[in-house]
Length: 142
View 1 (cartoon, rainbow, N blue to C red):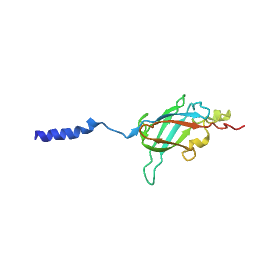
View 2 (cartoon, one colour):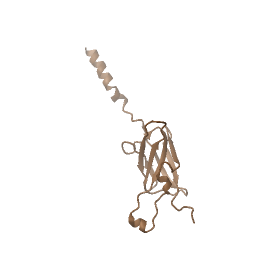
View 3 (cartoon, rainbow, N blue to C red):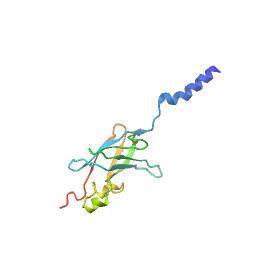
View 4 (cartoon, helix red, strand yellow):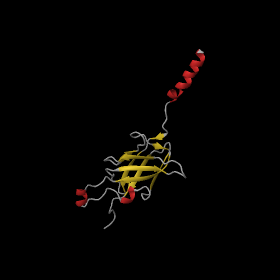
């Protein structure tokens, strides 16, 4: 009887010994303009590229003043599962006053949609840091 109890105790404690794995890889990166200047605010949103009826994963991260971001799925900075992701870069919303002064969003509107941004990343062990390059509205137009 004592041996059976010890066996059950060992089996039940196995998850504690091996630890819990979320299957998430921590992902970080930097968003910058074509000239290398950092995008100083906004957010990065990713959605997995799923085949057929497979479940899509999504995550997001706030862009810091130096252009850096960390992706969050469940808790701050935890990352995303391995796989391919479409990426959107969102500008902070402009207030009516900012619009009235003629201010423009920090990035071109095409980057705010997963379908039009043209940005993709592939997350895998050893490849979890990414550089995203975007353009400003009106950049290159005279």
